[in-house]
Length: 200
Length: 95
Image (cartoon, rainbow over all chains, first blue to last red; front, side, top):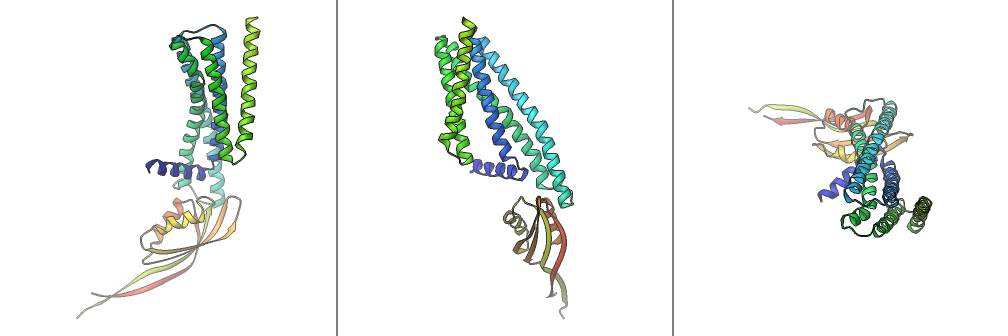
């Protein structure tokens, strides 16, 4: 019940500040980015024959953290400016100061929410995609198992993102998922070709 | 011998309000209706613009507090453009 009320409150804030669409787009773009960054980093370790758990996990954590900070700060700056401009337009239309209104407080809260979504989605994707490889290095199993695990996790994450988007936007989930997976497969092929090129 | 006291109270207000599209007219009216003394809120959209809409609010109740109603409308991002009508009742009470 508390979660339900919280969700309703967030939905109200996003509606008032007109940020529902942008939050969804930020989540998709950054999760996609993060997934590719995660897979790229793992491929880098794999091609370099680097399989030391401490090096891999700390490097991935640093990349994920950097991505989160970049995502949060970039979105915060741009979204704050957007909200200020939107409030100014509204104030000019209503001919009244909105500083004491729910629109002003919603604009502040939604800026934080959108920035967190932007930062955390990328971080989450990096960690999720790289976790099979990190786990394989931790248990000292074959790096091939790790890289295949990460590739499959990458494709599964993209499929999930595609499904989420298809459902939210009420368009054919099969179409969205197949499009997203196609991009994912192309990315994996490019990484594999890169590996072949390096090893030659 | 008992004395009679007279008191006036606003029982109906008709307001012309300019508001943003969000919150919608339903949530807007519900928020106003939650105020003490209000029995009924009748809202209708008169005009729609790109960013705003003009609504007519008919508020019925007992001892309507205009300043509180104005405060709620302001908090919801609206502005009262005019008070188009008011109904006041005189109540006589025996002391």
